[in-house]
Structures are given as C-alpha cells and as structure tokens.
Image (cartoon, each protein chain N blue to C red):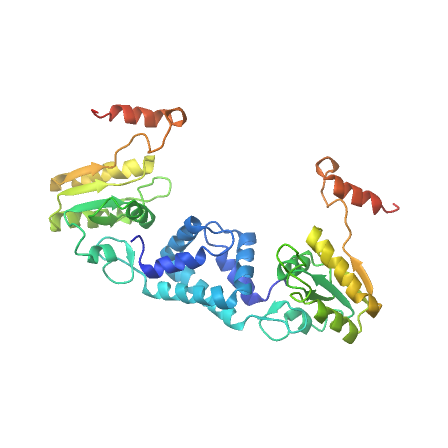
Length: 198
Length: 198
C-alpha cells in the first residue's frame, strides 16, 4: 500500500480532472492533506454545494443555480439578440470580454462526424423554437473557427432560414496585437476578403 | 459576471491546488459541472470524508485515518528500523518501491535557512525520543540529495550520536537505466567514491 484507501480513492477521482494526471493528482491531494482546515474542508463544501445546486438553464442551457440562469433572469439584458455558443466555457469567454448585452443559447457542443454528434444531441431544435417564440431580431453565431464549428454554423443558418431572422457570425481577421508575419495563410486570406474602408 | 458566484468561489479554491492555475481550474470546474452525478458529487464526498478523518500519525507523522497510521499499526512491519523521510510524498515513494519493511519517521520538511525552517519546526526531537524509547537498531536517512536534505541528514546524525544507534543513508550513484554521458559530474564523482567490488 502507499496511502490509505480513502486517500487513494480521492487521488483516483482527482486524476479524472482535465490537466491532472495520476502524479499531479497525488501532489494536489498531498497539498490538500497538509491544508485540511484552510483549503480541503472549504473546497469539499463548495464542491458539494455546487454539485447540489447547479443546473442547466431551461431557456439557454447556461449553468446556473436556479431554473433560469443569471443572464436569462437579468431584466437589463436585451431580448431580441441571441448569441449562439457551443459551450458554457465559450459563454464565459464572451462574458469576460464584456461586449455583448443580449442573451445566449448554449448548444452543448458542435456537430462532429468523428464524435458522432448529430443535430439531435445539440440544442438546435430548442434554438429554432426560441427564435420563433421570442421576438428575435438577430442571431449571432459565436462558434469556433474550426471545421466542426463552421459546419455547425452553416447547419444552424439553414435551420433558421424559414424564420427570416437576421443571422450573423463573429468576424474573422487579424487578432488584436497579432503580427502578420506570424499569422497563418487562412487568417490573412480571411482578413483580406473582409477588408474594411478606413 | 462570468459564472454564478458559488461557481466562481469553487474555481478560486481549485486554483489554489498545485499544478492548476486560474485557467485550468476553470476548465476543471467546467468538467465537474458537466459530470455532476458521476464525478462532482463523489469527489466532493470523498474530499469531505478525508478532510474529516485524515490525521497525522502520533508516532511517525504519516497521514492516516486513525491515531496510528496503517504502517505503525501493521504488526508485520519490523520494529527496530526507522526510515527518516522529509515528507509524506517521500514515504509514499519509498512504499511504491516496496523494498523497505520497517517503520518510518516523517520530519515534515527539511532544515532550510532560506525558508526559516529550524530544527524545532521539524519532528527531530520526536525522532530522538523515539530512538531512545523503542529498541532501534538502525536509522536510515532517506532524504533528498539536495543541499537542504543533506544539511538535515548531518544535523540528525549529530542529534542521534549520543544514542549510539547505527545511522545509514541511501546510497548515491548511477540511477538504474542511467547513462554516464548524461550524468552530472557530482553524481559520477559520488558513484566512483562509493565504488564496490564486483
């Protein structure tokens, strides 16, 4: 044996987190064991609390602690603009940027032939119903500029076409602070095609 | 806001673990949120359980779930041989190797002028008392081959001298699978000085 079995179980569970392997999970648990009072007990409590209270927002799919997520429940957020993101992580990234004041719709992934994710696994029907039911002026597709992300964007644009809503997507181009010399050909091409009058 | 405050608190606590920064803690918490049933709830429960039951062994300083750690409580482990390690992580490393069948003594760190760790912060007086009280034949110093580790080894050897116990330390030399061309001069020198008859 190395550690008592309770502690080995804890290490095994920690090792299933992304970014932690068996070795770093062991190190993390040792740190926790050394800081039982100031860190381990509060962390266990916070985790149990969130595990119990967290739920997917019935409207947008964001994660919150009640049936409506904080964004859907916020009367100051504009209705009529829905930003479609693949994942909660992308929603958080948009919110960190602090430039969007509308509502979100979290798909729960992207279409992927490789992973076998079809339209029925994603919240696309819910999006179409939402665009129909709410007075939606614009749907902004904020999906990754990857093959899967762009496939999903095209699929959603097709699915939303009958509703007549305005569909836009994030601009592609040179990132802020980016140097042309280090950019890939695809990005430079996209930036040239989408050039703007100064 | 990005995530609800409960979730932000959880991310903040996770980010205090070694090997996780704010970004990877966020990613880990998102994974937990997606696997609330199969991963988050069991992890929170295992952590709370260990935080409640884990305690330092009164004899050797190892971490266990009762007053005596599993090794000190095991009647099959030889008494009379005490292996001194700096940390519980080192004890686990020794146990993984599976070559030592005696008991341990965990110092809780090494002497360090830089960190201000003196002999009183470590469990050295407890070691001296233990060597006196138990019928100890040999004390094996299994400390890191670093300046702090070797300073601590020298200090312990001095402190134990009056007891007359046999004091040994781990051999230094070429690691198993090591290639001479890649070894540092210090290791080659130590291996040459400690050469053995074939």
